[in-house]
Every structure is written in structure tokens, then in C-alpha cells.
Amino acid sequence: MKKIKTLFAASLLPFFATQAAAQQLDKMTWFNEPTEWTVSNNSLSMFVTPKSDYWRISHYGFTVDDAPFFYTERGGEFEVKVKISAKYKNRFDQAGIMLRIDHENYIKAGIEFVDGKYNLSTVVTHRTSDWSIVPIDKEIPFIWIKAIRRLDAVEFFYSFDDKEYVMMRNAWLQDNHPVMVGLMGASPDGDGFQAKFEHFGIKHLPDQRRTKWLKENNSN
Image (cartoon, rainbow, N blue to C red; front, side, top):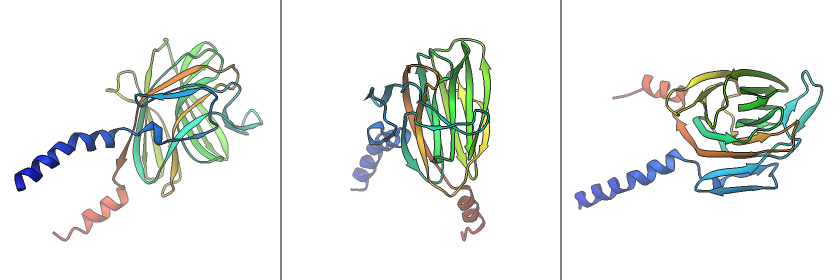
């Protein structure tokens, strides 16, 4: 009987590993659902809504909160990543990952097309928005974007091969608060474009404070 149980448990390992590695897109929710989108083989394709964006107040003097965002909700600490490819056409066309608490607190990071050039772009919003970019000197067919939420900070990374990751931004985000996390696209100055998101996954990370407490209070 013990052998049978062991074999049964071993047979379940691939199943649980798959479930842990990938967030099922058909269980996610739209905020500002676009008119055209499909989910197939756990990848999302969408036509990004024209004249849509996320931005609050600073520099431009306006606030917009109307771009498509496909999300799930997570508490605690986690790692999220996705492979992004898109047919960028107009100034400020962008696609990436967003972590969002509410309309005044969110971070979006990905690729943004500005004046004919590709940029790694991050917008951090806490009541007002800021914007930072890292120029890319070549056209890229796809890119991986990864975010790691730990305590009160989120680190964002990019990769061209899903092996070597380079940090693009570290930003504050309130901890001990659930967040919406998922896939976003925006086309503030254009007529929309086609974007594809593949291999989207969220991995739970043990809470650092709790892990430290458990280690310090280990009775064994």
C-alpha cells in the first residue's frame, strides 16, 4: 500500500508543477476589456484599444485610466513574468506587466515605442506618475518581462532569452495589501496595435518576515 501511495504521489508531481508555474488565463478578469481578444493555448492575443493609457497628472496635466488590463489578484510576495511580442506602430504604443492597487497606485513595465525606437519603459504611480526608459538599439521580435514583489518593493527585469535577466527598475509598492497583477497594453497616441502575451506565470514566494520569524523561533 505504501508503494502504491508513493507512486500515486509521484505521478501527481508534474501536474502540480504545471499548475504552480502557469496562471490559467481563462480564470482572469478584464479591466477595460478591448473589443478584440482571444485566449488560446494559455496565451493572450489582443488588439490594444486606440487612444488608451494609464497616467496621472504629472508633466502632462491630465489623468487617464482606460487601457486594457487582464489581471488576477494576489496577496503577499510573488514573482511574475511573461513573454511579449507586438506590432508597435505609433508613438507611445506599449505592452507589459502591471501591478495595481487602485487608480492612484500602480506600476506598469514593458516595451514602449517612442519616436521610432524601442524602449524598456516603467511608469510608477503613487497619486502622480513618473516615467523612466532604457533605450534598445535594435528592433526586437519579443522580450521577457519579470517582476518580483518583496516586502514594500517591486523589482522589474527584462530578458531576451528567459535566462539572463537585467534589472530595469526598483520601485516602492505598499506591502501587506493585495494587488491586481496581469497584462496591459496602451496606445495613447495611436490607432491600436496587435499584442501577444505567452508563458504568463506567477510563482508564490514565502513571506520574508514570516520566514525569518519561523527560523528564529524554531523549537527543534
